Every structure is written in C-alpha cells, then in structure tokens.
Image (cartoon, rainbow, N blue to C red):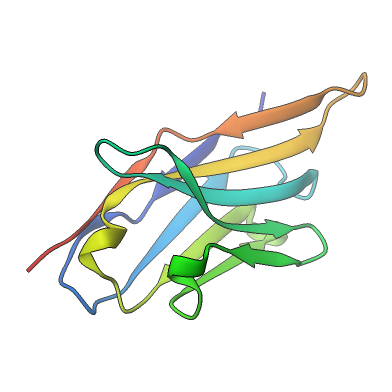
Length: 120
C-alpha cells in the first residue's frame, strides 16, 4: 500500500514563499493525477492545483500566477511552490493522488496534511 506524506508547511509572512513536498512510499509514476487540496477553518476542502502524468496542470483561480505544481517521478515526490502568499492562503494543505489499481478500481490516496499559516 502506497502512502503519501506532506512536508514543508509552516508560518510565513504575507508576501513570503514556501515549498510543500509530497513524498510517496512507492513509485508515483502510476498516479495518473496528483494534486494539492487545502482546507481552511470553517470551510470545505478545495482543490488548489493538480498535475497529470503527462504534465498537464490545473490551478484554482485564486492561486494562478503565484503557485506552481510539479512532480519528480525519479524522486517519487510532488511539489507545490507557493509565492506571494496571502493571509487567505492559510489552511491545512493535503496531498492527493489517484491511480488505477489491479482489478480496475481507482485508488485514491490522501496525506495527513501540513499546516500553512500566513501571518505577520
């Protein structure tokens, strides 16, 4: 069973940057789509960015031009480079991945989350 673990969260001032990492215990090349979600207090979890095996990327409008998602299959790791951070980016950020399992089912994997706090 593959596990995914996030790291890189923390406290940063408005306008600052952070890079989140999502490391998998196995190969990520089988994950046809990977993404970052976030959940702020009192709000629903929302998709921030996603990336396919082919490198197609999608971003939520609120983070376009500020966040960059990438994946390194050789390191079994996905990243989220966050710049020009705003207070409204404060949330728990989760790694998510989907792959086709043996038997044809879709497997979905979630990390435990990493806190990002943007505050002066």
